[in-house]
Length: 111
Length: 119
Figure 1 (cartoon, rainbow over the protein chains, first blue to last red):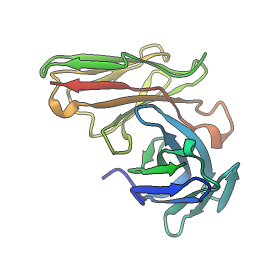
Figure 2: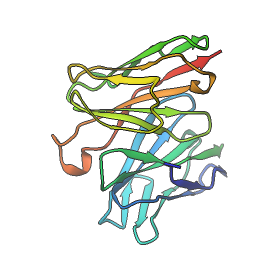
Figure 3: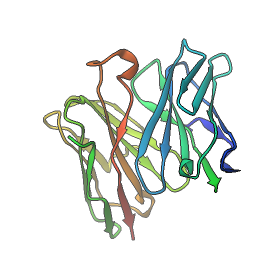
């Protein structure tokens, strides 16, 4: 499969709780990105972390990257109902410019 | 320029017919990507262009699929002799390429997608 894996496949939490999603990838990368997709819509870029970075923050988002384990995590703090969406990680391989997407985590935040 | 535009948004066709999708990227972006996404899955890479040159194609892109970007601006994706397995959302995205700082070069801006249903 060209895709990495994401864990969990689905996550349901209450508003105000934190949500953590994990991603694994297969090749050496230049960077890893996270995207969000609302149902039936296109994907929206959230955050990018370079291969020489270990952690990055943007608002309520925190991303970590462990290149030795080929894994990344996305933490959304103080979740809101509007955060309900699918979240995908995407790795950019060192060998080219394509982004390879994971299978996604469906996050549901209950009000 | 308000973003990446795709047309049509929805296409229903009968098996065996040909279909063509169009993508208009952000005008300053020199890279353009096509992805396919089925329900509950992540986007699967099909092909990408740097200006008018098609630099990479997935083996998913069978002989029935062809993509062009004739003047380095808009792109078309044609599927010939459609099959029911071609039913999916076809996503187009563009990125700046190396005109911006390296880390931003491959941040993709996606269109809303073209949903294909083959009966």
